[in-house]
Amino acid sequence: MDGPSRFDQPVRDFQAFLAVEVGAATATIEAYSRDLRDLTTDLLDRGVAGPEEVTPQLLSGHLRSLHRDHGLQPSSITRHLATLRVFFRFLHANGRIQQNPARLLERPTQWRRLPGVLSPKQMRDLLEAPTPDSGRLWLRDKAMLELMYAAGLRATEVAELKISDYNPTLGMLLVTGKGSKQRMVPIGQPAEQAVQRYVCELREPMMLRYDDKRDQRRLLLSQFGKPLERVAVWQIVRRCAQRAGLHKAYPHMLRHSFATHLLGGGADLRVVQELLGHADISTTQVYTHVDRTRLREVIRNHHPRP
Image (cartoon, rainbow, N blue to C red; front, side):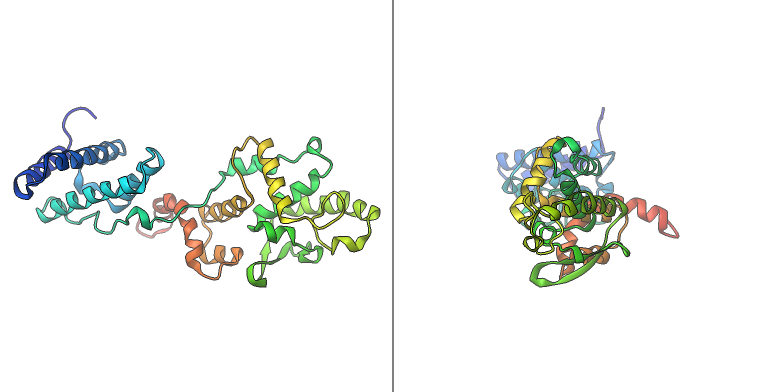
């Protein structure tokens, strides 16, 4: 942005306050000035014209970008946070702004680590990775991936599925999660079709060659007709991810993507909690970070007075 901005004079006044009234050291004033220069550059790039337009969400986004885009460690971001708090407290105390947007900002040590999530396109690429030329068990691999994404399954949950857990008439899956807690999860048509084809074209012929007792009526089987183990689920996901050109993917990422994509599409948080089998909704709330980008759109489309 060419020419002066509405941030320039408030920043100069703040620097004078630090030097004259606080008696801060030159190095301290320079550190505050660098932090504010980073902030104002970021805000101007986002179309924010002056301090009165700054919101807590914008400040939080700026702090997270310092970590995400610039690789700053929490200790460095904490110093930036201190600068923001002092600067906006100064502006508020002097009547430059009506509300202090930095008042409720969290320290970086309080941030929760966000789960790894695949984009919808990456998810499609992963689901399409198993093909006839990827091995004779490709139908099993495809059914497994489809189920994990369709129902938000953990690696252990998908490995321990029994044939009787799937109700093709209702399109529902009975999932046994942590602590033997069970939940009913509907699955979509792609997963239903993948499971049906796997059972008819691969699993049933395999059972003709092996003793039926060894499978313990598990849905997903190894090449020798034995129950699929959890470690094998990891190996299959990793192999399919490589075929899809994804450098980093693991079983739980499909569960994260399931929840994230549902919330991004407008699903209720309580419904997602039930589908995931979370006892406490605070565990599910970690996924709401992706839905924040939709808040303005939701208000505009659904509020009677947007």
